[in-house]
Length: 423
Image 1 (tube, helix red, strand yellow):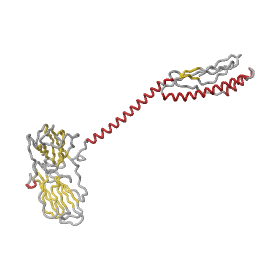
Image 2 (cartoon, one colour):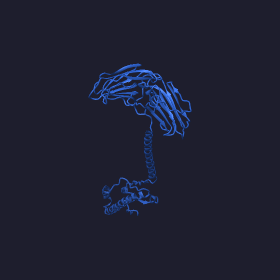
Image 3 (cartoon, one colour):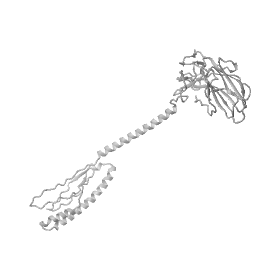
Image 4 (cartoon, one colour):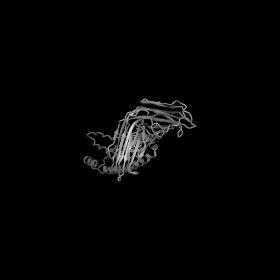
């Protein structure tokens, strides 16, 4: 059901009449007028508001008076009057009937006077509501309590049944009607809820099929609300069930928001995207952990080669420790089984090692030549100190993944220098 549009651009104050009888109007009226009145008479079951005119004169075709069987422009218009001559009486079944007058910006006239009163039933046959066509094999009824429920669970073909909700409403009160069960043949078996006692009353909602979610609540402002059920001649389903209650005021918005199919789809899409993101994060974490585990399994094995300082006796020449020479690595069988990505690293490191070994051999040859040219024993100490300062220093040995360490013998200045190991 659409939300009732409030009356807008009203140029004069909205007036509400709550007595059982009354009279009001505009005599004369001005141009650019847009005024609204409400008749909230205390109706009982079977009573209506009769609206008649004791004077009526407006600019024909430009200045109009409208009477609504309800409190908003969405309610049924039961009278549209313009020009001269008294309109025929009309009957409002709602607890809040709206009267609106609109004039243009030019010619005006003497105006109009409206009278209203509460009557029992319909006084004018031409204004009587069209009755529902009924062909109902079950017992229906009229409900007068402030709360209740009814419906049909298990129906048959070719039914035309009607129920009435005739509760005592005070001004500002409405009947809230909503479905708790709805399962009918879509497009053929339907439940109609009217804001009034006849098929001519405003239609609030049409229930059919098996909707999910169920239709939102609707609000009946009339003293008699009709529920009409029609079925065709073929497929039957479970049925329907309605609940109603009297409420004060209409929730804002008119129809409370309920979860729709679009909302469910959007929620499912968002949930699916979130699930995929979480799944991707978990996969990335697992792959990272697996890579780290493999790296640890094929990790770098390092062996530290320690060069010890030998103590010398006072009678012997002091021994100069050999420099921290990088260790010479011989590839092991495990190194040959590394994966392709480790081979490139091994090649680069092998090239670096070969360069350092060549530099080491050149330095050892130069050192041996200098040793042969040394002066007598008493002049060796200063020269040895000088040579020790000239020799290159290495902060730490070179390590290669999964290599076997071949120990380099220490240099003994008291004897000959052994040749470097062969790779």
